[in-house]
Length: 430
Image (cartoon, rainbow, N blue to C red; front, side, top):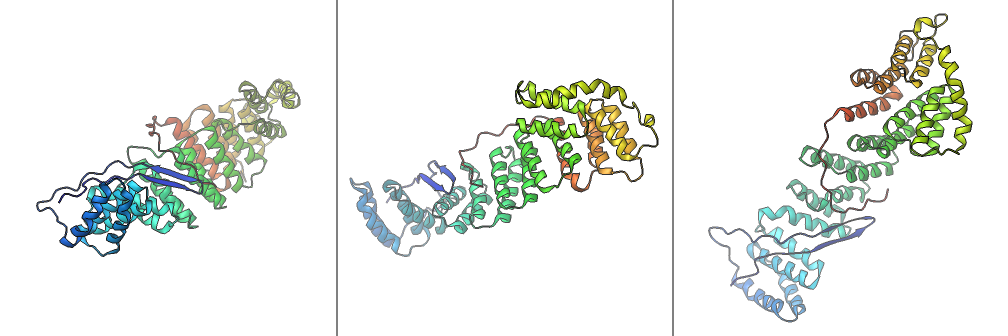
């Protein structure tokens, strides 16, 4: 006799927490014909024929108790495969998800499921388990599907999520790292949503070092004011920055478009004002005016911008044009302070000269000096020299130096292909 040869199933994965995915698999192909087609046993044929007749009748619900009776018996091989196929088809008719899962499990266990369908079958079984909050089982099936090459329905976030559902944050982030690395090694770049999901899970661990790592990964892959702002914020939470280091962070934020609010501009302007960096105060507040973040009536205009503008001319006239013009021997910090002033006035060659003069002095703060040299070269567009300087930065400033190097790489890299829109995936709560 001829049994149903095509298998179709609509799997709806209900929302669990705030993460949900809907998978709509297409019809699977019939099992490939073999030289000797498998046959069902007489015993199985005798019990499955009534099921098929009931399924084809006007009321397919009558087939349910018959199918349950068939599944209650022990079948192996091709009998088990066909029993599972009937169970899946009846489950679809009756919208009985439990029956679909039981049938698909039997098909996979039989050894007769088509090899080309095994990746999808394991994915569907993972969906069933995930929807039922059987996290370990879901992880097993999803991982098997992944290892077999399945990449449909944007299911990778669900694979990673099975670890977080079991409070296995470290393993979950390791899985995210593998998933994203594999995607980037293929022809399709990992979507930005994945980086955000992993970043959120890293933040939820409470480990700010881990959070900073994933925030930087996001900004590295998808640079924007938002992603770089997040990376800087993460770095701030791990670094007890002094006033000079905070100004260095704010300079990077300005460069990457991460200054988003009037409060950001206020912080930058006030930090520069404390050091009498009038050129920098003017530059940052005028930028805020131009992009509309700092309105014309904002208190910052009268409090900081107008007074700074008055100081610029006399301040520039009083500055030494070269390190040799500094009165006395000039300490390292004095030289670097002059360098900061010239940096604010956008005279990058003079800024580099003073930073380097400061580096040559005894007891120099090498990390501050190389950070300044790198920043000046980056502002000037000399990215090779900037990266060389940033590579010499160590200690608490190293994360910022690393972000500068990543940003430089982004400016010089060829445009990457845009990933195709992924299936809708809600981000898990952080």
